[in-house]
Image (tube, rainbow, N blue to C red; front, side, top):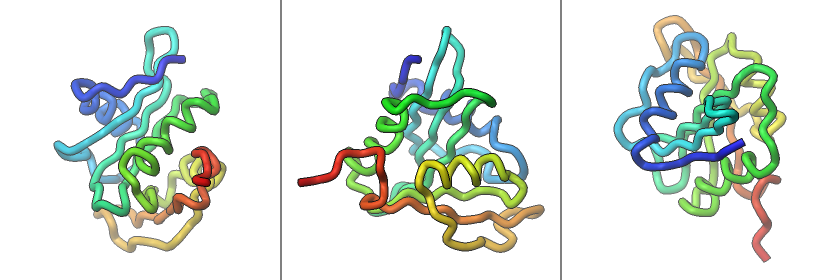
Length: 143
């Protein structure tokens, strides 16, 4: 598996992720997007789009092809960017109420359910999942 993150590809990876998120959510992540893509045999198998960075928090959207499992080095890359490079204190994922697969995936990564954004879209609420830097098991601990 190859991990890609190149400024010229961020929008392409973002579109790939966007098209794989089921349900009614914010389509398109805007111009200030950073994305990491995962490619196997020349085809995308996963991606993470980071957007709305505030200096302390960043929103993340994650999409993985069914039955594909990310190796540890990919998980380290996913969390290294916001927590180590940007210095974020937390990552927030907003998930539609019907997207049980994403809820389960986020919990397995270490995210915790924090609440509900009622009427976040015309047809659905969004569930808020957060991961705090100190709780992230995918990045090395500071000494």
